[in-house]
Length: 517
Image 1 (cartoon, one colour):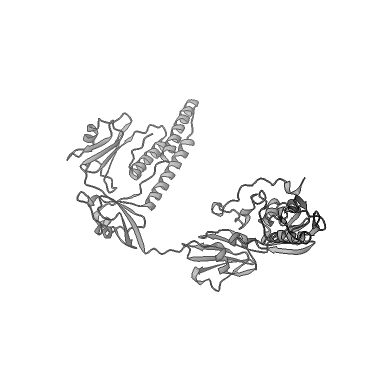
Image 2 (cartoon, one colour):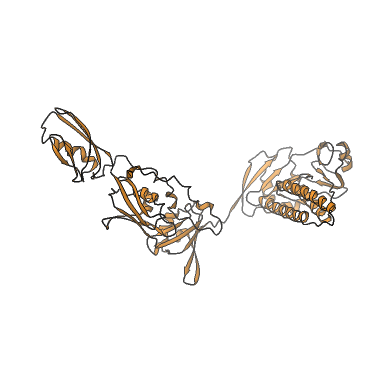
């Protein structure tokens, strides 16, 4: 089979990106992403002005005027093509962009006038090239003499990422060096020396000598090969491309049996050297000086306020421009860190409940069947409860304490409007917002909503104030309050009953949802 017609291997899946590495995974080698079959499947057959004609190349020759002739000539072993009435013309070694001129000059030595000549390279010569050294599949591979070294390396499976060098790829001809290629120049700058391969050429990937691993706040978090055992840190910065957020560099050095750590600001890397085997981490040491707080609700002014670090809630309230209907006494504060803690606490309670439901013992077969049904119900409850997202509300117990509350970046402050309703939800026949009635009790509002459902637990009634506090038992709801009637828990397992009750309270307080089985 013609070497040019050897089918290329199909493209392979792209290597794992550095951002997708798991803890303990080997670092991705910079450059390994280019050898996935994309170069092997595409030969270079375009016009290369620097290409030198070689024996076996096919040249299209056209002549017109006093002599009409058209043919495809193959450059013979002596490097000639044969033109009728003009004889052999030496073209081997002629540059591609000079081929037409060379043939025209030789033909017109015989035909002084009235003959036009056009000669062009039809295709490059099929060749077979040895690929060896630290590649995944050393062997003899077919291609075209105009193909790039990347195509032959790709056909050999690419450079071995654990051992091979991307900085020292050597091309040999007759056992002598023809070129030494640095693939980092191609990856970073798009520069790749154009080579013309001959039959029997050898591509040798030399062993990797030095390397440094980069991680953290950098756009290129890879294992980088170094050209020397010690290089300036600025050279590594050029390779890693730190993100705009990066401020410092941590360098962990393996020196014999000792492990040393060094730490430098990015602006002070002028004299720092990076050594073979170092682990370099770009970090972002930020010292916040301002806070961004979002305002929602009855606010007429800006919806986002920038506050100095250390500002308190009273400082924010002083900058508000509330609407006439605003209720500043019921101001609400929501915080991402509180939301995360509430979610972790809820997940822990759900895991404990799941354990209690699945490890309960049974004395009889009938009890075991009942336990299984109950466990299935608990697992369904756990699955639903895991979808609940807490609100992250900070409970503001009193105005004095609220005024002294330190703000955090990303806080959300809600200025509610004055309400004349009480919201009723949970185990009642018609959950709704009811008009506030001075002096009315929880039972009065439940009666106005049609009464309790059959699954309601009349002892589990929660009254939440807008600021997140829970009203004392027996107190009358106030305008803007929310009444939640929790469901009755029917289980023979006291531990399970206690766990579900705790979770229902957590969900009611953290997410303001009356959650049922």
